[in-house]
Length: 284
Image 1 (cartoon, rainbow, N blue to C red):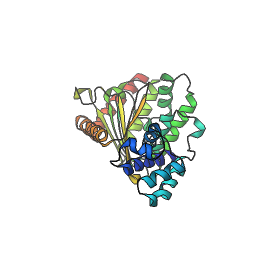
Image 2: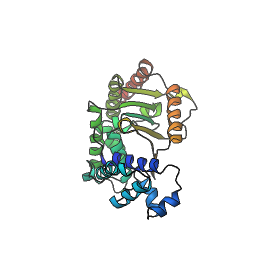
Image 3: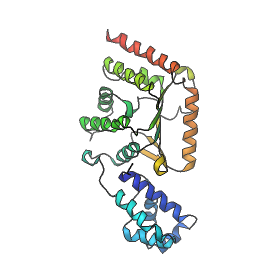
Image 4: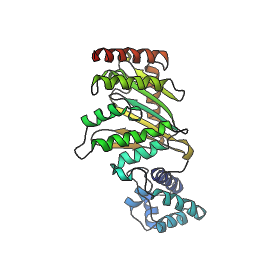
């Protein structure tokens, strides 16, 4: 699978940081005739990063004794500067970064305490959520189209392995008219029967748990390019975490959530079916 611009920038940033190795940051800044801010952004993957120009990239390769890698890194730079599929939608930068990484993910681990994950939302559920949480500059229909287009990933033969832990509160919370929740829970049940999709519900009876102070997080892995990131989001900001310590910490949290949640299969199915019947009863 070809890299999209975000994944290419992500990989270029990680390659440049690895190539610097133990060299002192300020010494590299001086030798490369650049600024500390520029070098930091070149080594930062994601929406806070930047792509060096060809001359700067060549100087870095010479400085690191890696002239033989210049053409390879130049190609990554070219890919990183290409337009992506989301350009017509004028997405906020961090959301665009997330959508591009998600589109090439080999696995997605998603914890949600308040919502059904966006990657599996029905159109009606997505519209109700977007309307309720709309930022002033957002357009409902545009946001809905983006969410549905993101979901095309799950119809691809190369789709990622998807594991979700969703709290009982999220499946009981009525979002939109009652029929919206009926349709949404039916989709969750159908998806949970597919071999590469795991749905687990964290029940109220689980009590205190490791993620009580975390509203949501996603662990994205792009195995074919050796990339991994944790994504967290709030109304005010979003954050990509890429160092190994953070990845290990959130992986451990997700593993503990899976242990605390109902097992996939019958235990989760039974609770989903039970809550589905509650929503259906409200339609009468």
